[in-house]
Length: 403
Image 1 (cartoon, helix red, strand yellow):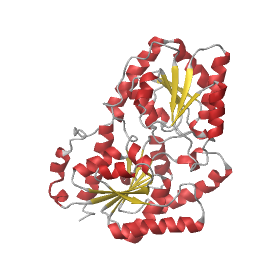
Image 2 (spheres, one colour):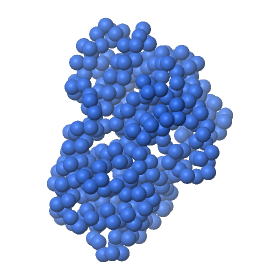
Image 3 (cartoon, one colour):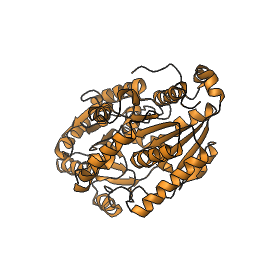
């Protein structure tokens, strides 16, 4: 994957390359569903834009991270929307909120992240006359991962809507894996020159460092994720039961919280029941998971579909072998037999077999962990993602869209 030699956070080289174009201070507005998601997945990009002299605005539902966003020098704008809502009056009001913000702020570039911001934000950008529109889809979400009737019914409508919204001359689409790119290209939803493959949100390789696995106690298998059924939490619990019945000694840590705004969210009571049964340890949400990975021996994420999961990247950067599913997004991080194992989706038995191989072989865990770290450094570091996104901003500016 070819990238510029620029390093993050030092963006002085890019500033020089942009020259006169960047002499005009531009405004970038991020439209994100939740403030915590902006903080965990888009902060390095926003910092790089700020360091280039851009005015950075973050429109999102503000909860626990509002002050942190302000302290970074960004301007947060509160939105009242909810991801789960489908009530027509509420959704119309949400759209009006965004349109009003766009007309008042007059950003040069809007950077939409996830499905609802992409749809509402792009329509609002059309009405508000925003010069540059970037749509980032971090995977295809519940609608494309789920086999529920509701998801299958909505899917064709979304693809039709995408075709209308994403073929505009001032609009670019960011996807995180080759499968999603091929989906949009094969269905003639987006032209090849308007779709950019950027590998996820990146990982801070300085923060997530490989350390020797703990020698005391039993091996620890860690799943860092929102607690959703389509992340494969149920399969992890079932695999744990299979392995315990076979006499293996280990612990499974579930790190993350339910997401009530997502239809696939697991009830807190169910998670606590699993914890009380001794099958897993439910640790809940952790602000900083780097210490979790230092205590882990194996990482697991048997998701049904992903963009490019940050938790796998952080586990690999920490030098831990991984077990995940052979599905879009996940197979980009894990090379079967090299830095972990790929198993079929929804197959708890195959998941248990793969985990057993790693539980039995410390040398294999070490070998795969080292390989995973090298893969992250070469292909998925935060620096690479920041550079590629900033280069997209540059490309928009150089096409004179913002002048």
